[in-house]
Amino acid sequence: MSDQDKLIEALLQERDELYQELSRLRENDKGALGKAEKKNERYEAKIKVQDEEIKKLTDHLAWYRRKFWKSSSERFIPQDPNQRKIDFEGLDVLPQEKEIIEKAEKEITSYQRTKPQVKSKPIRQPLPEHLRRESEVIEPEGIDENWICIGQEITEVLEHKPGELYVRQIIRPKYALKKETQDQANVKIAKLPMLPLPRSNAGASLLADLILSKYLYHIPFHRKIDMYKQAGVHIPASTINGWFSQSGDLLKALYYRLRELVLETDYIQVDESTIPVINNKKKRAVKAYIWVVRSVMKNLVFFHYDKGSRAQKVVVELLHNYTGAVQTDGYEAYSIYENKKDVLLLGCWAHSRRKFTESIKEDKEGAEYALKQIGMLYKVEDMAKDKDLDAEQRAELRQRLAYPILCAFEKWIVNYYPKTIPGGRMNKALSYTYNQFHKLSRYHLDGRYQLDNNLVENEIRALAIGRKNFMFCGNHDAAENAAIMYSLFGCCKASDVNPKEWFTDVLTRIPQYNNDYSMDLADLLPHNWKVSNSVQ
Image (cartoon, rainbow, N blue to C red; front, side, top):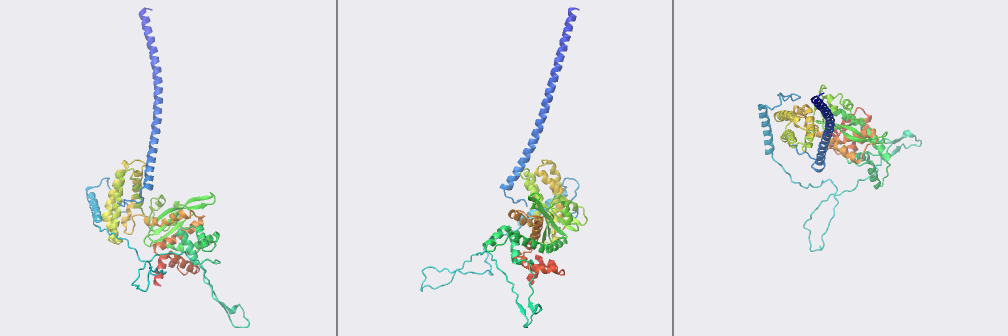
């Protein structure tokens, strides 16, 4: 082999070695790069999760700061109109639509600016004349026969004495014939009047006081027992509980009659709230639910308890024969009535407004715009109230002023939704409002329909205060009795009836109604009782 061939062979061998070394290095680099890329992907995924968690926590922190450190009041109260669901062609507001919307907004704003603002100064009212007066005369010092009285100044101060427990003695004289031989037939005695609770020494006024103390003034029974002890009367807790349970049974028929009257109307509002109830198996209080149904036109309300369940089957059983309008929040259990014949579901703008209020910290511009549009709807209602419009006139005003705003607002929601942060508060507020929009917009169909569900939510306030005081119901029966009492108190409040007078009178008379089915228990309900007593 020549020297040249040897050189070529050596070069080729060296090249092969270099190529193998290069391939080996490339493989090592590729593996290291792959590991680096995988590691980088893991870091990026972790950072993404952390960013989402930070966003979520920041959102929650802003909400809690607003809830606990800021005012809880909601400041922002700032086609064919007869169709049940607002449909539109395209997402943009057409020129003719814009003209109608601007005209409606201008009229609403103009009315708000020109509306006279009446500010009344607080005036101390005189004390009622029927109250007993105890006079206290204070003579000035240094008065002798040289002085003559020329008048007097009277200052009245309202004082209070604790309530009084007293014993009502029912005395029934016995009479006998004046004969030497007397038997039982010859003895006469008046019949004992019917008492609220047979074989009990609790009078109607005492039972009324117990019920009012717990469900109107939210005083637990153990505190009431202590108050009676201070008055020198010792009543065991078991006796108090027995009296209350029997009172609930006594009033149950009246409660069912109230339910019938409420569900006979063609417009109701429904809501539900929690009530703690002792679960004997779990040995603790568990969260149960109580339902509230209000007749808007008759101004009657009743509470419904069904073993503490919030399931859809409860509302199905409760409203199975109902026909008319049902106004609720966005709870999915009511959706079953969306396609039911002769039932019209209405939404609650207060819930939608609340969600936009909570999203101000996240999206100030979008939330304030939404709240301004909702505020316009409420201003239309203020206008109708100020002008004292009837239902027909109110419906016409809504179709003229509120309906164009509703159409534009729905289009804005659809356009603005893609711009929001997925899962954020603004995103959820828009989603909730749009999904409920067909229910929210139906209020304009009838002037009687309310813009929101606030009237029935107000009835829950007593329940909310009560559960903070008496803490829980001992069992399902106690919760059912609580529903009865809250129902009757709600009707007393709605009819402006003195609950003490009403309960005392009704507990005295209701045994007669329960024994005579020809008498209508509806006569004892607060609104009818008030009329009959005013006539007398």
